[in-house]
Image (cartoon, rainbow, N blue to C red; front, side, top):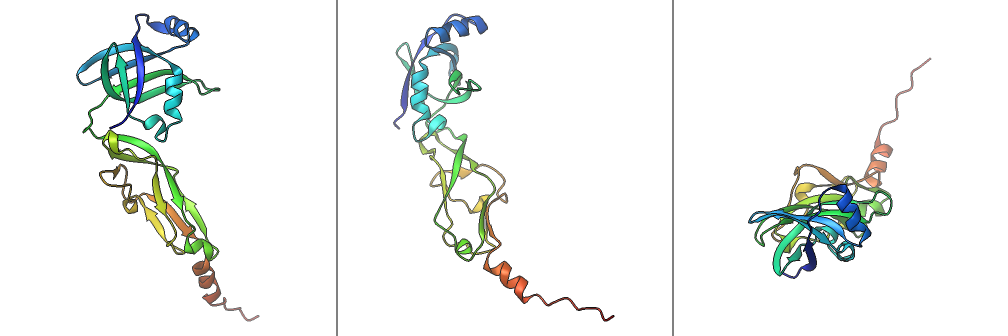
Length: 201
C-alpha cells in the first residue's frame, strides 16, 4: 500500500508557549499515538500536511510517519486549523494496522441525469457526505451514485449504496440519501385527480 510520507521530529516543549514558538519556526506540533507505541510529541512540516490535503483522499489519506528512522502507518484522527486561513495548527496521528478497519467520512457524488429530472422532477440530495468502514488501503475518494435510471418518486437509501469491494456504509441503512420528486408522475396525479364537487347554492 502506497502512502504519503511525513518526516517528523521529536519535540520536548509542551504547552501553548512552546507550540507558538514551534509555529514561528515554521513547524507545527503533532502527536503520534496508538497500539504498540507510546504517545510521542512531534513537530512536522505544515507543507507536508498541505500536500496531504490536496491528494485524492485528502485528510483521509493513510500516511507513513517517520520518526528517527522508525516508520509508523497512521491516519489523522484530529486536526486543528486556523479559523480564518484554515492552515493546520496541530495534528494527531493514530497508528493503524493495514488490516484494521477504520471509519472515515467521504463525499457522496452523483453522476448522470435521472429519468425523473428529464420528466420535470428535481433531484434531492439529503447528505453530501457518508461514513464508510474499511481498511486503510480501501478508503475511497468518494461514494459515487449513478442516478440515470432513477424515475420520478424513486428514493435511494444508505442500504442501496455500493461503495466498492470491502467497503461498508457505516450508518443507518434506512437513512434516505437521494430522492427524485415533483416530475411527471406528480403532474399526472394532479391532472387525474377528480375536481371537487361544487356545492349548490
